[in-house]
Amino acid sequence: MRVLHFYKTYYPDSVGGVEQVIRQMCVGTGKLGVVNKVLTLTRQKDNFDFEFEGHQVHRVPLDIEIASTGMSLAAFGELARLAEQADVVHYHFPWPFMDLAHFMARIRKPSLVTYHSDIVRQKALLKVYQPLKHRFLQSVDTIVATSPNYMASSAVLDRYRDKTRVITYGLDKSIYPQPEQSRMDQWRARVGERFFLFVGVLRYYKGLHILLDAVANTDYPVVIVGAGPIETELKEHAERLGLTHVLFVGALDDHDKVALLTLCYAVAFPSHLRSEAFGISLLEGAMYGKPMISSEIGTGTTYINIDGDTGIVVPPSDSQAFGEAMKRLWDNPELAAEMGRRAEARYWELFTAEQMATSYTALYHELVARRAALPLAHARA
Image: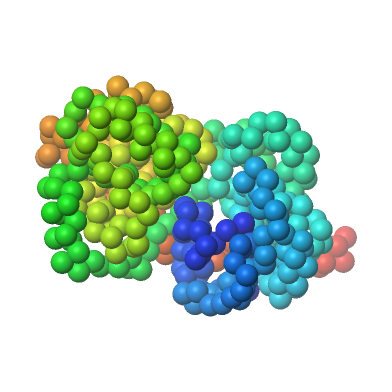
C-alpha cells in the first residue's frame, strides 16, 4: 500500500500539531506495511527530497504566501507525478491551494482528506473560497473528522455526513525521548517543584492572554513553551500585568519538552477559538498523566479532557473561570493526581498511535478495494 500525503508544511521546516499528526500517521502505518510519502512546500533552497523516520519527504519551493496559504507552481506537476506512484492520496485540510492543486493535477486515484479544522479567521476570503472548497470535498472519496465533538459541531462536516467518519489522533509515547536526569534536575532548579505548563505555537487562537489574565494577582508558577507570531505581544502583556512568575522559555527540543511534561503539576490549555480543532499538546499532557484545564469550544479538546474526570473544562475567554480552575487544582493535590491518572488511562484507551494507524490502514485498503470494484459493478450493470 503506497500513500501520498499532501500538506503545506512538514518536518523539519515546521513542527506544529498537524505536522506531528502526519508524522505519527506515517510512522504508525509504516509499521503496518504502508509506504508513505509526504509532499510539502519549503522556503529552503536545497535538500528537497530526503528520508525522515522511515518515510520519504518531497519538498517543492514555496513561491508566495497569502493569508497563511502557501502556493507553489512546482507543486502541480510534483503532485501529479507522485500521485501516479501512489495507491491513495491523503490530503490534510484546510489549505485552499491544495484544493486547487487536486484539480490542476487531475488526481484520479482514491483519495481522502483528514479534516483538521474549519476555516475560522479569514471570513472575507472564505466567501470567495467556498465554491472551490465544496467542489473539493465533494470530489474526495472519504472525509475523516478527528473527533466526534468536531463532527457534531462543524456545519461543513454536517453537509458531508454521509461520507465522513471519525478517526481520532493518536500518539506513540515510545518515540518520545527519555530525558536524562541531569536535564530534569536543571529544569527543576529553574522552574520549581510545582508549575502549570502550556506547550504550543504562540498563535491568536491559543488564548494565552486569557491564561495571563487568569494568573494576575496570584503566585501560581506558569511555564510557556513555544514561539510564534504573537510572542512579543504576549510578553508585553505579561510585563504590564507584572507577572514575574510566568516564564517564557521559547521553542524547545523534544528532550526539554518531555522533561517539562514530566515535571509539571498540570497542563493549562486556554485555546478559545475553533481554530484549535483538537489540541495535540493537550493530548501529550494526558499521555504523561497530567490533569488538564481547557475551554469548551466544541472541538476535540473536550474529547480529550472530560470535565470533572480528567481535568476541568471552563467557558471560553473567561479568565476568571480559568483562574478558579487553576486554584481548584492547586489547592487539591490529591484531586489533581487522580485526574492525571484518569487522563493517562483515557489516552491508552482511545488515543494511541497504534489505534490511529490501524484505522487509517484499514481505510486505505477499503478505498482501493472500493475503487477496484467500480469497473466490475459497471460491467454487471
